[in-house]
Image 1: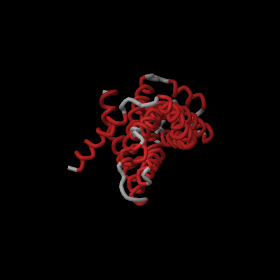
Image 2: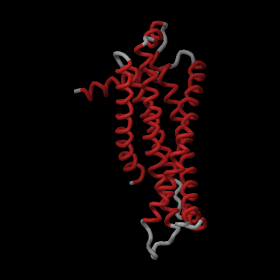
Image 3: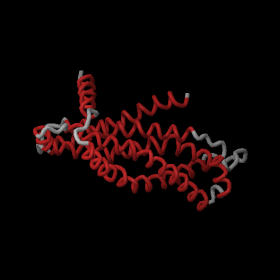
Image 4: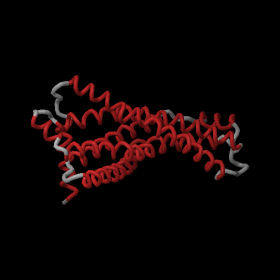
Length: 246
């Protein structure tokens, strides 16, 4: 019964979030702030994780294909497809769920327990829309850019690791990342990223918006937001993969 309770309350909250804004200019300015807070400030961690993960994927692929019958360019090809299909969308989404999700839940939860949300309601402001909608728009717009950055940096990190360690030549790696390239794979990754961005921001906002108690409950809501966002990301990954690649 708890599932249906939270499921229904979540969608009731979304109806309030997507209601018509009172003043569009205020929402525009708030969205710009969220683009910096949720998007631009996440570029650093995405770059760091992507370059090292691209390097690890390349090295693991090289060490698992040490066979004279395998052409060396397969290392670049397999690294490219792994980064595009799963890492730069799903894995980065899980990482952002931890970084962005906990931040959103904590921020809105703190506003709830300090009665700032109640003050907005008293002033006649749709607090759900004012606080949550700019976050959703900012994430949906900026997260695909983070995915593209992750793909580029991941492939570059793989090239650095492959050439420095000597497991693959620069020519073979570059040929591999170009060989039999399917552009739809990038589209597939971006579609998943949009869904993940919506899941992270909406679920985290839900747990922050309905928190009750004090600082301890805010911490618990942040943990729940991250956990359930990750579960929904993995579930949607299975569903979207079946729908888009089958």
